[in-house]
Image (cartoon, rainbow over all chains, first blue to last red):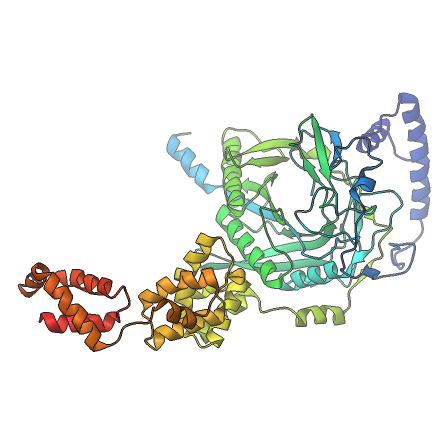
Length: 101
Length: 485
């Protein structure tokens, strides 16, 4: 059984903004543990001579040229938003003073 | 501990500073979609499903972003990775609709470079840890009223280069010099407009302090909301002083993000870092890896302009300029280009330098005009200097001519003729003027002749005034002196 605790589940859930109940947490301890067990099994293979796979498709350098295209009309962009004022997407007031970037 | 001992202890802490700089690359379109990067467009008009973070869309890398990032890497003496990839950085914030930012994690495009700065006459090399490509986020607006915040996705997906320095900086002064040198290089490369007010260049200092002799780093704080170089400078000095105080009073510095409050001149705790930074990076499956071969790097290197430090050195040698002049004239690429064009158009280097750094600079500052937008082109400045050199106008007239050239954009020669500004070098005409001035001012004339030589300046001024400033000053002075003695 993988080395996963209820605290780990709670931590991962909070990073994903999820609030599982106790029963779900218990189930996830088992399920995530089983996944880790499977990974541990894979780790038994000697992969020291194998290049890491970073992408499912072996392609590199897929580019577009730097040309500005017509954008979406604003009405369309805002159409499915839960709340707008016709210009902005409206979200509950943000109290923190800055994002991550 | 006595006050004096405290002060000694106080002085001896060493500040250790690293800088993260985000610079918006000036491309026509965004990094992963074709939307325009225009700055002042109405909210949410330069958006599409990709930069709005709609599910199922496919980003495609803008080639120009990679080109520009490589050129910055080369200018900062970095190794350009022959193989790199994009990753997803996961976090929740209302400026990020898809809940991850496409960035680079373990394989940045550029790494292990350096940048040289000059502080107090000494040159110091500052390590560059990495420079990687990422996308900018949306902009949040808090001033709409009604209790909501607004989100504008025009900025979402604008290409960014994040440039991370080693913790090699030791003071606010060094950080300021680093930012200045970095901005200068970015401007020379033409990869960004580096406009801090519009947020195209953003600096975040990491600050820690440690007692002398300690090699281990102290706990660092990360400062956000810095909107200018002087803000970076001041926020670092504040943080260093604050951390000293914490340590002096027996506390320990908490690892956290602190916001710079420019109005109050202090940093304020924003959030504790321990819980906030678990980004669960993983490779971006929707973008192909970047394979940059030698030929590509060479092509970028060959197209790069001469960089500020090289140009500074060349200006000193080629134009025999001192440090001050060479530094001023190479501060921006546009200024350096202007100077070289003026010299190529025939202006003596020292004259061109003096006019550019003196009257022209003052006029441009007053008009809030950049030299590259100035109506006085380098050829016009050279033509004006030629008019002084050949005696057509005096330096004094030139000072009056320059604002008119700026206002009208006309050739100096045409303006001189039109406005009748030609210098009077006719000895006969000037003699008559001088005689009239002497007749009108018998007092000062007698004073001069009885030994009060300083009245000469007054009489000279009167004579120049009588010619409406057009008298050849050298000739007027000679004639006046001759007649007085």
